[in-house]
Length: 325
Image 1 (spheres, rainbow, N blue to C red):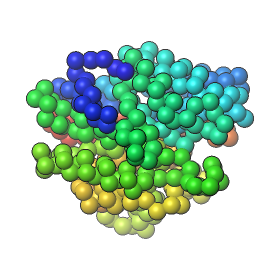
Image 2: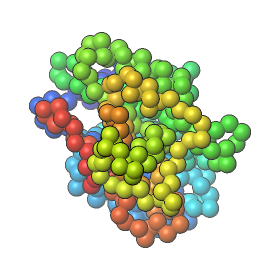
Image 3: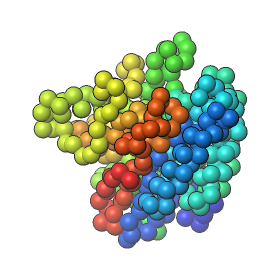
């Protein structure tokens, strides 16, 4: 776990991290690295690691957030099911930058038949020299539901970062049972935590990071295409075949509850590697992080428009900018 005078873990679901509120604070979102670290993916892994290195050196972030599918224990593409080895190699790579980082799980970090489940991966990542991670409440759905509250030196919360596990697949199987979503118990927990912060500061604004997009992302995109002026385009595009959104077939309440609650103003996801869209809908900016993936999609290693990172900057005046890098 990252050791710093500026970082304190207050309980099993909360970190506080002191920043200089008079300076810009830069968060780099990286998503869908799909690192296989196997004999089949060796060449593509090298391309991915080089891409990440260039992005980090260019962005010079103060913190890095990995939004799922960081590792890829998929035998036909990686040549290994050993996600324990993959996790340790990822951790060593991320620690080499000497920048604090955190992460959420995606739907591929623990493939069927892989060595470790998410609980076991959590124990590995907690050993990272610069990693900020906790499993969160054991009674909640998923692993890794927690808050990193960015605070000033007076310990007043400036910007809560909400880390959520959007889970993997629905009941009854793996991939063919459909993608999962953020469950109701996670939503209730999150909104209760945000309500507590709102009591201290009615104007508090938060960011949420998770892997799979909410259904409302697709809803907003369709409205925008029809000319609905309530949807505000920011950047990027939908480049998946047939304008695909990898959303859950199961009903989720997270987005609508966040709108009702009013604290979360930014949501960042990954999952759909060719989508880079960012738009504002019902007061929330939803952003697809730019992907890194080289082995996941057929011929994606030849593509480049979607490959990169997303730089989120909290300005000294409290304003937030979101840019592709």
